[in-house]
Image 1 (cartoon, rainbow, N blue to C red):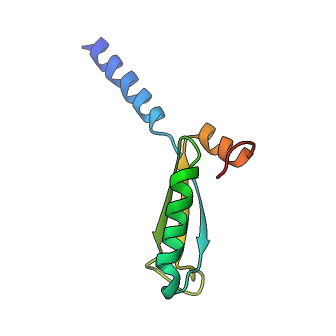
Image 2 (tube, helix red, strand yellow):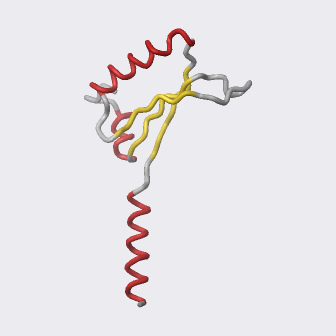
Length: 94
């Protein structure tokens, strides 16, 4: 029984470590008439030039006030190594 609990705890610890991810986001303001154009530009560019291991999302901000007055957030997410490689530049087009 002790071995079973130990093995389950170790597997749980490894699973939690495997779930570790990082993200960064950039807030942008897009006029309503330009939303489809901006979406298409993002889709075209990042479908061809996405950094390996990094996901790119465009999220709409539904909660606006004086301090959150942006309309969209561009979110980059991935592992620490993938995010570091994306921001390091080099041959990475993103």
